[in-house]
Length: 335
Length: 285
Image 1: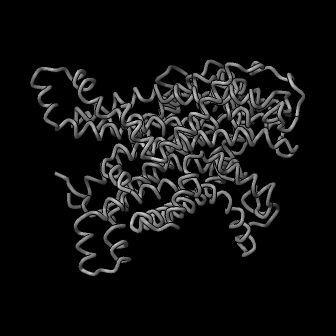
Image 2: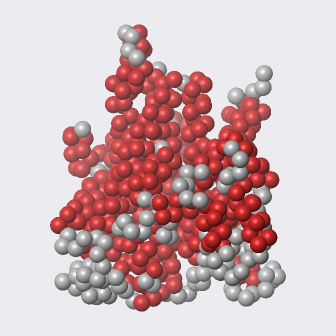
Image 3: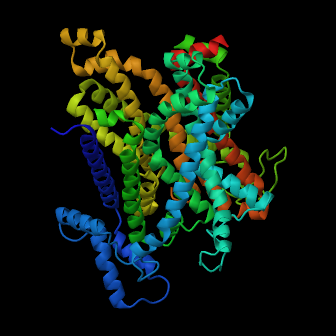
């Protein structure tokens, strides 16, 4: 009988497989719900400008038919759809023919991943820290004000916040670059100048993601901490003369972090949505911008490729958090 | 119910502020019924007029009176949120209550599916959906799609309450006196979870409106039904900001932000009200 960590591991891996399975199935169902002939429509859209050789069109039609799964019966369609997804082969991009879709996504993915990692870690750490302080020092006016601000931005969708920042820093007070991932025409040679340009271009996307995200972690942590401080062991530590900073850091916040990690894993999908929406507003060269432009030029393979890659990538990230979770919560191993 | 509403209004400033904000927004949406212009008519007033006493919010470059257009837009946006919320509530209640009551394998299977829907990034899927539907995309279709994808978070909450209700004595009594599972869930358990359902409804409306606005600003919905997002989409199409027609962007954004904050305040304060510990803390001081 397996128990403890291996069992936990098995459960998480199973959940990962299920997420990918259901996600890809939703994509399959969605693409088969269409009442129009997507293949001819896509080819018409793609060949609208300029001439394309008949061989190229035939190749396009073949991969589109397989991707849309229009070849053979439904079972066969389903199988070929999975085969394409499993090897990550979404055929050539229609808008950037003949570059494969996987190459385009591979080029955009590092941008999205780094934007996500930086903004999520920053937001999560800052939100939890401030929330913990606000829960522990409940009467502090500065912290109350910070909480009020974080809460005011929290319910506004990512798009609107990004849009507001764009207006403020693009039209009213133009001090920050509002578009692109680095200065145009700059050599990508990892010089200090280039890295500086990367950082400056990242400020607005990261800030708009942080503005929306902070409130959630702040409120969660504050209510967790304000519940924990009423526990007997905290009162005991206070009476025993343990320093307040140490009580908060080692006894209160550490326990409160456990549900916040679970919360992070659960909200990763939503954060990902936010990131790719934000990218599009600031023209950041990541997956989100690629997705929106793919829709505008009618590049079906690219849209489908991005959707499936997103599903797999997000569930991989969740799996990663799940695997690190036992480090914080030793009860998982003991079970 | 009526009493706790009055209590909330009296004791909880967040709740009071939320109610005031949402009443204003709703009142504004109701004005659409007395609008002098149909929503899809253009060039009924001179274009590009700044806000004045005759055109309270100015006019658009398409010759529409922004004030009256916005009443239709916010009405459609609110209706969208409510439609998604109602359908997804039914799904969340059924799945949450059944999972919590049954426990064991059924619970585990349902919650695995549930967690899947929480994790999957919905934005690319909704974009893909628009991409294959294109001109067949409609307001109601999007609402249905969002409802099918947006029940999971709340089902988990409902299930956690149902799980503890399952161990309560009155549930045992019900089982031993021969009540069916359906009757126990509907007559005994449902009243206990309703307070959470109310608070999550506000969050769900916020969530779905947020997606609707985002998708329509990008032009990924039916752009001929006026919603707040569609309004901003047309403003962007006419490069309103560059042309200096700031009111075309300002008023829709302002209105939608007020709606979000109002809904959010209601959700947060109701949530607090449900938890008696924080409720006591508030009424003490």
